[in-house]
Length: 247
Image 1 (cartoon, rainbow, N blue to C red):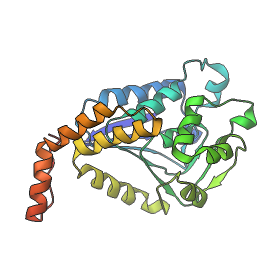
Image 2 (image 1 turned 45 degrees about the horizontal axis):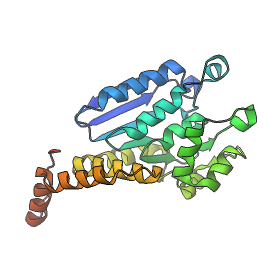
Image 3 (image 1 turned 30 degrees about the vertical axis):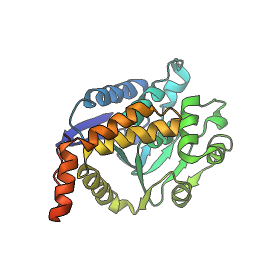
């Protein structure tokens, strides 16, 4: 159901259940979370999450919703793992995003969508209360009023509305998705990883209202003392592209 591979400093996870709009059962959610946990210690600078077929992800498989215990929500755990992943995560939305698939996308750092895609989250139409962690993620990323439209109205949003609301960072034609994703990957992979990953952590903590000031100051000091900082200054003086090592 998922394909995971790394190439150099880039990791890629692809959802491969197109006949079910890439809906995830609990086993697939736990498998993906295990991959993310394994990759945390690898020297990755960027991660790409995408899908196959006409949809990016339809969230939790409906059979699981009705037939499994969701007290310990594996979708929440997976989205937390994506959000906490050290390197930036680019979500390449190859098509529509539904239900928990929207939360999966929101757990990523950047989202590239395609024209013609739509998004809706249907729990209110099914008599389901969405997990508070997922609602909180939507409030943090999109604001409380947009979250009301998503969850309380179960509104359907087209690609232009998603771009305007900030759900999408970039909107491209379907045939340009791969190139735009590659452009973002190249940009992130070429930046100083200690600085990028440290600032990702700081942004996440600020958005949650949990900033550890001492830890943030330690990250700042480590970056100033790093070889990458010296390389960045040297590259600027010499008017060349820097070659960062993450040290």
